[in-house]
Image (tube, rainbow, N blue to C red):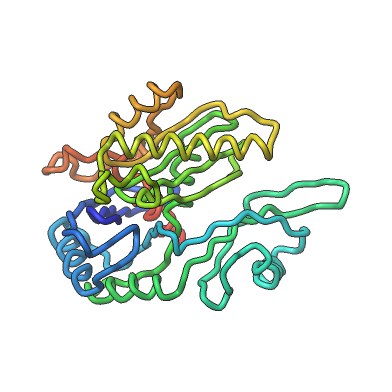
Length: 307
């Protein structure tokens, strides 16, 4: 969700054979969510209840995706240890990589791969931390709508999984975005190599000369291009590999933003994940469904099937 709307998808079946059985989006009045954080718990509960009741959702269990500045993603390398010892090792050493006291965070991690050098074998770990207060605000809002949050995931990671299932280049960049946040990633041979989130509101370009927000597609595209250029530049400083492609996943106005990328010299493409997932009852009023609009939600729901 972002400051403009909530998006949700219900998926049945299995991780290997998912079926989209319900979906919907609900516009939000200004002030309920801001930059990916809950500002009004009670009002968000009301709109969540409307979203679920008006769009044929049957499950009350939720995989929640969040994206805001209270979510911290860091890449770390730890000596390889047996699988049953990884969690203790990560939790013991994570503070070296996280600029916030760990007691303020809910911390999780993903093993992204392994590497070998002259010092031995190492695990590449993606650390994901989220401030507990921010999480509690979301959980309370969902509880108020009689929904149970079964798991919380980073939208950046969800978009990354969507990209991995649909893009074939070895090294590529992804700009995922919603109305509030840009999620920028670089992948190398199927592995997350870099990820960062940037609120549009942090950019000087997002405010007009009167100090008010100027949320136009053109300004959004300019910020995305600038931030992606910086991200690719940083990646190239760390790696000898060149970025082969640039892909967009998100909304709003993705095709207009694509044209702006191409005007800036990027041979960008719109990623098309999940096109092969069957959609149940698509003929009954659901003809405007686009997997790109719901990529993060689909990724979250598929992950939920395996939880």
